[in-house]
Length: 137
Ligand SMILES: [Zn+2]
Image 1 (cartoon, rainbow, N blue to C red):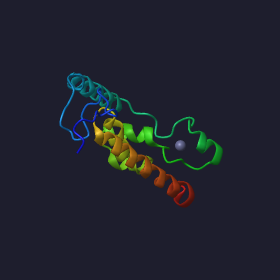
Image 2 (image 1 turned 120 degrees about the vertical axis):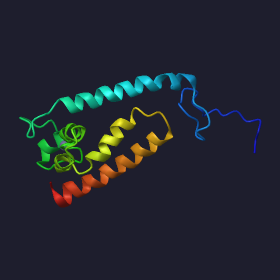
Image 3 (image 1 turned 60 degrees about the vertical axis):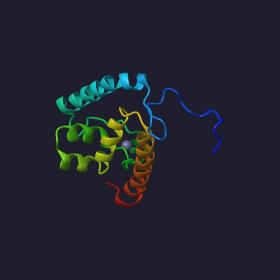
Image 4 (image 1 turned 90 degrees about the vertical axis):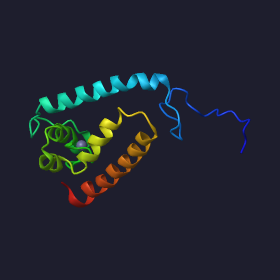
């Protein structure tokens, strides 16, 4: 072990070290703000209901190909999940619960967030292959 080495790659603003031993005071002060922002987001998702069939689609992939991309329906699914309508959300996008966890994971400052997003992106990529080429729905 090299005790004299300086950890040049360490981010002093990160919320926790890789070992999870320390939390900076700045990260600790930000926790109530993060929780408040997450609560506001959840409240907005719960309070508003977008139309089940939007008047126009904003997805360029769907517009070009007529096939749903891995993210199609995710916005409507987020609003449905916030209301507890899991079946409706799954109908919009099968991976919407994962998307909700990833979305609220943005308010978490720690190494888990990176792994969650890496795995989540891989999951959505695999779902995209299935959705575009196999299932088509
Ligand atoms: Zn799409």
